[in-house]
Structure formats: C-alpha cells, structure tokens
Length: 259
Image (cartoon, rainbow, N blue to C red; front, side, top):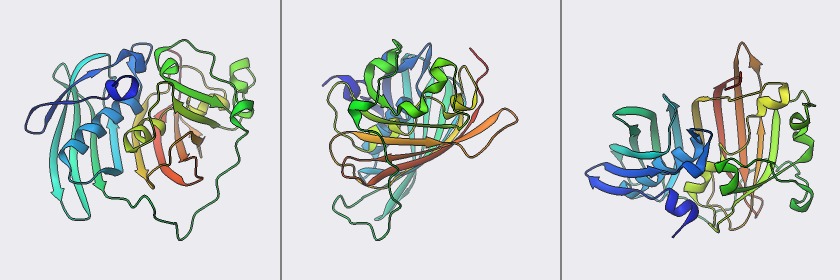
C-alpha cells in the first residue's frame, strides 16, 4: 500500500483515538492541504462507523496542520440504522487543528437519480494542461486544468472567480468517499481569478457525498458567489466518470494576501 492509501492510514491506539502521520508530500509549503487532512479524519471515522460512506461533513479549521505525528479523536454522538454522527477532532502537539461533525450512511451504488442538474462541460483531458508546480501536493495529484480558468498564472485573471479541472491520484487509487474528501478542496482558490494572490486559508468547509463514484477520473467545477471584505465563498461540484454528481461542497475562506 502506498501513495494516498498509505498517507491516510490511521492506527487505533485507544477507544476513539487514532494515531496518524500527516504526510508532508500532501502539503503546500509548510501547511498540509485541508482536503487531505479531512480525508485522514474521514478514514478514522469510517473505522468507528457501521456505515461506509461520509454523507455529510462540516469542518472548522482552527489552526494550520503540519507534517508529522498527529491524532484523530472520534466521539460518537448517534448510531442509527440510517445514519451515524460523530464529532471528529484532528489534534497535533496537544492543540485541536480541525473540528468536524461527520455523518456516515450507506449509499446504493446502483441508485439512479430521480432528478439531477447537468454537468457543465469540461474540455477533454488531453486539452487540459497540468499545474506548473513542484510543491508536494501537486506531485501527488494528477490535476488537469481547463485553460479558460488559468489566466491568473500569466497575470491575466479572467475576473470571474472559478476553476475547473480533471483529477485523479498519480499513484493508482480509485475514487471513494475518502478521496472525495480531498477532491472538494483540491483546486487552487477560485479567488485567484478575481485578482487575489497568496494563500487563501479555509475557515469552514461543508461537503456532501452524493453518490458512490465510478472508477476513473473525477471532474471538478469550482466557483464563488461573492468576494467581499477579505472573504470569499467557494462551491465545488465533483462529477465521476459516469457523469454522476458524486460530491458537492461549500466553504468560506479568507482572500489571499501573500505568505
């Protein structure tokens, strides 16, 4: 086991407590990617739950996560036939980094939607370039961007806060609920296309798993509704290779001001 599976491994050390080693290869600078940290927390809660899918997560980011040993603490709040709810905390150096409520359930992988919005079109993968970066996170994910949303790289932001692309892990790992936790926070901040620059830290993120994803590439569509007073929102839809809406998220974050 290597790559994403190894990087999200958790080890039970006591009731409701899991030792983890946050992998610096999923970091951007010294900070661990928030989606990766959430994926680690999701794996821990699934160890405790009788349900296999993280259907709803609401996470508050209290402090920056850094590479190295940490602990995930899981406190069950409800265990039902349809859903279970747990309070989940990522702790490092005796400080809470992320607090989340995670609801788990059991989704039918063969369920056909009664109604669904249509997926926005993305250019074919072969027409989408990779992000020109050598940071650790970019080396772990294979993310191909819609060129129409990457003008900010050349100092020509479109003025519309949106980002789109195709995603898979570089080391083979088929999509599941744990990968979806990373995928909803994998795009560069959409506010870059509104002329912002620098780090844009997430303050709160809520995401929902809507379907058991089919194998293959995921398509990500991110956008903001409002950028104002140093804050912006970011909504992300994650579609699987079968054209199903697999996950959706909304977060509130600070506008980047450099690092």
